[in-house]
Amino acid sequence: AIRSRDDSVEGEAERKVWRVQLRDKSREAWFEVQDLFVEGVASETLFTKESYLQVWERRRVTGRRRKNAA
Image (cartoon, rainbow, N blue to C red; front, side, top):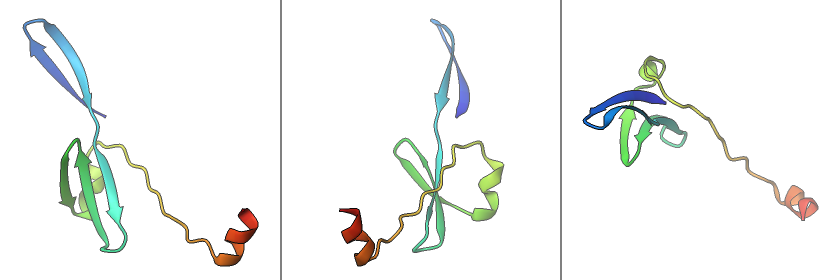
């Protein structure tokens, strides 16, 4: 979470803004997502920003294993 201060008339309030970094494996590209904003980022700069990072990879299931799972 990225913390920022809101110095409004009602008083100081701290709010959190979430940023996620995603990797598109098919394009070998990284993207940064914050709310509705999506930007491409260089993989060399990923560690320089405060962000929430979670990596998922979808596994392909073979036909034989799929039958046994059902």
